[in-house]
Length: 228
Image 1 (cartoon, rainbow, N blue to C red):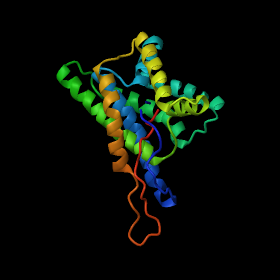
Image 2 (cartoon, one colour):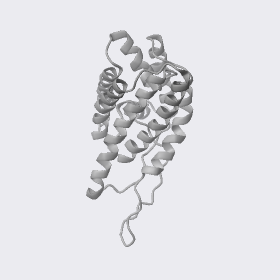
Image 3 (cartoon, rainbow, N blue to C red):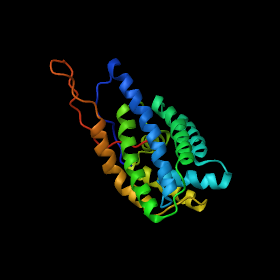
């Protein structure tokens, strides 16, 4: 779903780390869907792609999670002419985030009081940062929307910042026109998600190997593409 780019934290992924990476991948994707659901419940503004998803959900009568899955699959098809190669994380992203979003929305009661909606908004943004750190640190490939961004960047020669801005302005404008929620939460998410993602990328990066090991993970996370 939806922010500064470059690479995931440096790590030497080996067979021994695979179980941990799989746990991080699916925990991150599930938490990403849950965090998006909290932003929906808060009703104070969504992250850019979910503005579009919510608008399409209003138009079609489908749940926002199902719409997220359909849009993710459609975006993934756009990778073909861009010669992008999906990873396990890319395909899993399409389904897990949408399922987790609908599941969380079914469990969380509707919030009407502002005193409840504001904490939901804050919790959703922070949890989104946690989920981003988990998911990207697993290093199983970008989400479909971020892959679209990087693919367009390579094919057009335009900067990642410009490509991302054009894409997100377009999806927000379209989603808003269809009835998606744009508000203070949209702005707060845009401001906060970068620093939060950086923090949790560091938290979940691979730890150095034990003393005496020939391999020590010395890389530190730089800017990273958030899940799409």
